[in-house]
Image (cartoon, rainbow, N blue to C red; front, side):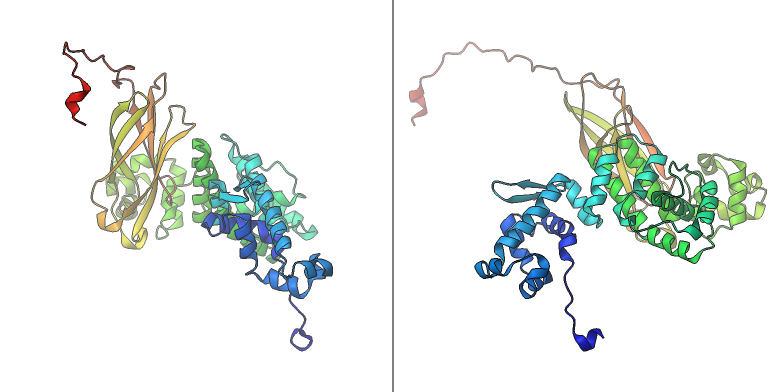
Amino acid sequence: SLMNQQLPIESQFISKLPENLNAEVALGTVTSIDEGARWLAYTYLYIRMLQNPSLYGVSLEELEQDKHLLERRLALIHSAALTLDKSTLIKYDRRSGKLQSTQIGCIASHYYCTTDTMNTYNRLLRPTITQIELFRIISLSSEFKYLTVRAEEKLELQLLLDKVPVPIKETIEDPAAKVNVLLQAYISQLKLEGFVLMADMVYITQSAGRLVRTIFEICHHHGWCEMTERALSLSKMIDKRMWGSMSPLRQFNKIPSEVIRKIEKKDFLWDRFYDLEPHEIGEVIHAPKMGKVLHKFIHHFAKLELSVHAQPITRSMLRIELTITPDFKWDQTIHGNAEAFWIFVTDADNETILHSEYFILNHRFAEEEHYLKFFVPLFDPLPPHYYIKAISDRWIHSETILPLSLMNLILPEKNPPPTELLDLQPLPLSVLKN
């Protein structure tokens, strides 16, 4: 019937105008209200406003006076800019009409987040929140606002609620609780019975990884150390479908699940495996034949070794030379062509990120030392130490922490030493011959 009657397809662009304008501002293609109005003239919305003005609130008188609907386009861009400015996604100067992107706006654009979701994150995210609260914030994202709790799902959701490891404050009647439960069930690899519930889980997990990365980037931008690490850890848990309390060897698909369960039952510290020989590993898990296999995978686990040299430049600035040494055997089938790591320098209380770098290790240089040089601030009074961390962007439990002691640091004097004035006869200006 659509082909026969040729019904016009109307634009729904106005409802998503703030998100699309934010993307253009983040790219730098729109830098003012006037440029925004010009950009809007290239959209299908503009075509439909000219063809069917009454549907979009444009009167015939307005169309006659302004045939190109410039004033209406300016009003739409102005309204969207106000919304984005209120959400701190852009900076909008009402006098000049200039639009400037913010880091939060770039994050929202990069991860395709709605303005409502960013408002929720800006309102609820704090430097220190628990994992319980983090799951709740994710479940309140506007991407999940159309999910509902059906009557036939309540029994199964209640059973899942009792199985998931992170407690949920809301009742099962709340759609946010359903999102929370299904996300945890996905990580836990729990089996679902209802097909509709399975479809909802797929929908949730398609967005969850992206949303957690958004939270990670926001916390990283604010310099919140604890929250940044927690969000990064949760992002990896969703990708790997395993909890942080499980054995890191679960990330290798070729190890039999019964062997993994044996290791987890032993409650053997992960770091101690590096000191064991293949036959000793086999003895620990009571599976001698698996010792050699496990030893190989343990040393394929991506991690870094760090060493540091620090030198004060001024009383408020420290120069750091970081030496990074890969501490694993590269396997193309496991690691691909590159491995990414986050390098963080944090304060003594592990609250603030003072400096961060995104370090990519290429497979061609997997056996070489790498060097990073950067500057971090110093404060008065001088803290006892800083922490330097190398955390994998992909591997759970891959974290190296190096304390940097500042106790014996010799800082420059507060005031430069006075220069001795020599007893010389001043020369007249005429000697310059200028």
